[in-house]
Image (cartoon, rainbow, N blue to C red):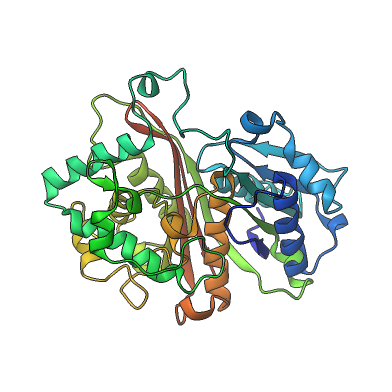
Length: 382
């Protein structure tokens, strides 16, 4: 099987775009990725478009064909992907598999979302799910995990607040991030309470935005002249939904991370950076542990001691993460991979991690029976 590489990346700043359409946002990111890869649209043999809420908000369930047509990609298979917060990383998973299997030498991945509209409501696990009917929307779910982690491991509200402070400091060096002004622990804790112990500054903001990737075979990449980054492993998993759930850890998270390390032949000690799903401050702390960056229960102390900061042992979310970059759901997983690629290419500007050679992108999405519906882990290297 052919090992896939990322040969091109493109992204627009995550922000509010009241005058622009979803198709417009996605098409711009796609154009930038093709331009970065130095390839003509006609060389793309498959397209994967990620979006989570567009069909509900705008009544169109085949947006991908419209987006790719805008940049000259047509007469090829186009697959529209919806998988909650992992929509973008799932599209990347499918594209990598298509290239690895020889079904396409080059694929275009686009993730786009337009959420800053009056019609947008709460993100939930689906109105038919008992969890949602009983009030377990996303902030409540993560608040329960925060309370449990605090009880079992002594994690403090100050440690959780430090995740938000760190990621905002990282975002200061990212022109694509939605929020770049520095914040303090005191400001995080004094912000309006959403669900105890999570304040507003500990919850990721919705956004409009788009990101795109060109994925191709190593052989094709050699003829492009662009700086290609190898995909060492990409894994997609789903929950087990056993009852009762361990609210201080996701079994799914640990399992999928372990599978990715095994597939790549690498371990947490090899990582130079991580982009992870920090939808809420507690989620980043839990992911430290699942990723093996620290022992279970030590996530709060890991961030408190500065290990996840730029210049620390393993910088986590140098882009600013969901908390500061913003979270246009369908674009998030693609943007995470783009950050890793930019770091490995040495193109991350003031947030560049010196000598970065191995990076990991992690995402989770959806709740069911206290578990996650989707988890992706991609490991990339040069």
